[in-house]
Image (cartoon, rainbow, N blue to C red; front, side, top):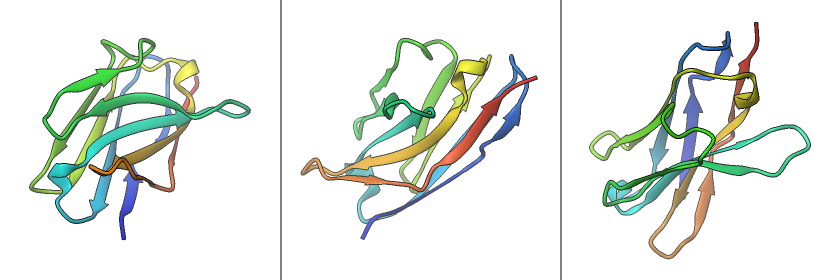
Length: 116
């Protein structure tokens, strides 16, 4: 059973920063591709960033250069460092774990609100 717990969301002013954390309870964390998704009201969930089990990263065009995804396999954790935040980054952010068999697990989400 995979359990993902996000933390670090909150209210921040435009131009500010937040760091989201995701702690994973699963076996062989290093074998999973880890991602952050976000969902805005009335919109579909979208991929924000991925860090593969090999360490390669991929970002949505809208966040490239502002967000950084990282992981620590020894701690079973993944982070999303978000800088230069914009009001359009406001969303619920979800941690995702994809197994080698491509089974997806999700956290409960954490709210990020960018507003003055």
